[in-house]
View 1 (tube, rainbow, N blue to C red):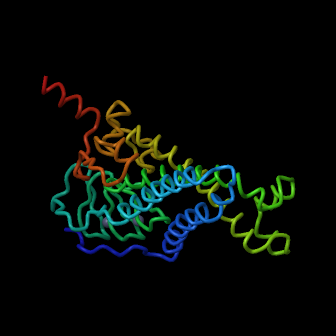
View 2: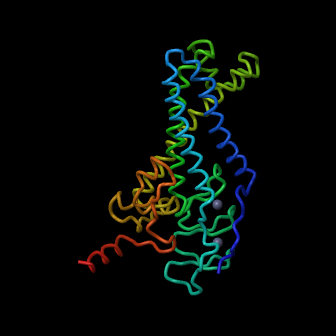
Length: 285
Ligand SMILES: [Zn+2]
Ligand SMILES: [Zn+2]
């Protein structure tokens, strides 16, 4: 029987820093775009500004709601009734002092066995597992969209703020800190440039992770399974594998809101393999 408590998020200093950075950057970017960037683009009128603000609110809402669902969804074996006899492919976790299902692994930071554990994410301070992967994927998608949106808008403002597009301003944009330190740009300009850099890095980082986790998802694999050449849980085609990871209503859940119902097909402990699926479909014929 597993232990029945869950350590609160964040569990380490790195986690606290990661969460603080993500939340601060999301709100700072929204305020920056609305209060600084949009009013500076003289070519757009007020209705277009309102359109950008509504899109920005929708993006911010999706980032923050996926984030909240991600960190609050129970993902571990704690509190679940685990069998007292070891079933095939199950393991005994000496730290939890209980049996753990296939695909679950113990996280040293969370101090619990996480169902279908992928990795421990510092930006949310929790593990990514079977039950919260959907929100992690939504978070990545919306951070990538938000980062790209802000980066495009910033192009209409940041070069003007730095004094026109030249080799020096390109360098200033890449390394704003030394330019501010040696007095070439003001503190205000440094903050604007820093946000602009972070928006671009956020977009690149989230897009890279989104691509990586999309590849894992269409093969129904975790990072550990991919690194160890295990792909027995792939159910044959990408659509079935995506439903296994995000639920049947995945497109609406990812694109509209994490509140859209898309129940996961498994209990987090038992996963069919392609062989089981073929046997079951033959039986039902
Ligand atoms: Zn454990
Ligand atoms: Zn963890």
